[in-house]
Length: 196
Length: 262
Image (cartoon, rainbow over all chains, first blue to last red; front, top):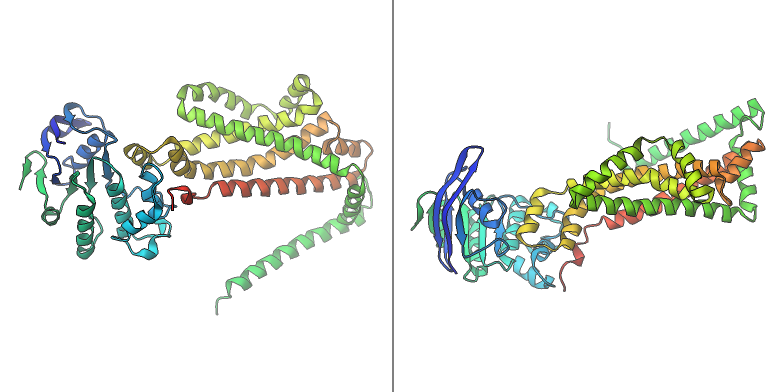
C-alpha cells in the first residue's frame, strides 16, 4: 500500500498553510514530519484523518477510518481507566487482560485500574499512544508523541511503537531530530519532500 | 491555636443546625400559644397530633398513593419526552427550530392558565398528570439540549477517527456531557412538579387526592389538617426526589466495566 499526496493545498483565513504539497509514503515506511510550529504538520494530519477539508489536491491509497491517530492533545475519557480507554476504540469484544498486558509494556501495572484523570501527563500521553497503536488502522499518525516524556521513557515508548507497528505506515510529527534517528525514520520537511 | 479535627467540626455543624431547627420550632410553638387561635395558627405539637390522626385514617394511603402516582407519572413522562426531544433536536436542527417556539411558550405561560385550559380539555382527574408534564417538559428539554451541545468537540473527533459506534459515542462522550445538566434540571423540576401537581389537585379536586383533602381543610377551616397534609407532601416529594436522584446518579457513573471482555 502506497499513500500518495499530490498538490495538496490548505488556506486558513488567507494564510496558506499547505502549498501544493507532494508526498509519497511507501508501504511499511516510517516517516518523521519535521517543521517548525505553525508550518502545517497538524493540518496535514487532520486532512488525512478527514477532520479538515482540503482546498485542492488528491490523497490516494488511504481514506479516513483506515487511519489510527494520536492527537497533539491526549483526548482521553478521563473517567475511564487506561485499559478501558484503549478497549473503547477497539472494534468487537476485545480482551481486557490482553490490553492490560500490552499497556504494561509502557505503563506501571498499578495505574491500570485508576481513572485516567488521576494519571500524570506523561502517563496519559502513553495511554493515548497505546490507543492509537492498538487500533487496527492501516496507517498510524502520531502528532508530537513524545511530549512530556524523559529520555528513558521515550526510548521505551519508541521500542513499543516499533513492536506494535506491524509493517503499517507510520507518520509522526515531531520537533526532535533524534526522534527520527531512534525511530529509524525518513525525515520529511514540509515543503521539501522526504530525505534521509 | 490548633485546628480542630474534621469529624469534630462536622459534628459541631450538625449540632448547630439541629439547635437552630429546635429554636424555630420553639418560637413557632410559643407563637401558637400566644395567638391561641386554631384557625389562624397551628403549632408543631398540634400538627403532629393532626398528622397522627391522618395516618390512622383508613384511606390515608390510598389518597397519598393517588397523588404520588399522578405527579410521578407526569414527571416521568415529561422526563422521557423532554430527553428524547432534546436528542432529536440535537441531531436534526429542523426539529430544534420547530420546538423552540413551543418550549419558549411553555416557559412563559402562567401556571394558572394551564390549569384552566387543562380543566376544559382533560378534566379534573387527569389535570395533575398533564400539568406536571407541561411544567417539567421545557426544563428537561432545554437543559438536556444544552448538555448535548456541551459534548467535548475534541472527543467527538476521536470518535470520528476511530469509528466509534453511535451507542459508544452516546455512553462515553455525550452522557458525561449532558448528565450534569440533566441532574440540575431534575433537581429543579422535581420540586416544581410537586408544587404544580398539588396546586392542580386543590383546583381540580380529583378523587382521591391530597389536594382534595387540602381543599376540604380550607373549606371547613381545619388549619391543623392543612398543615399536616403539607408535611405529608414534603415527605412524599423528598422520598421521590431522593429515589430519582439516586437512580440518575447511578446512570451517570463511568460504565467503563462494560467495555471489552475478560
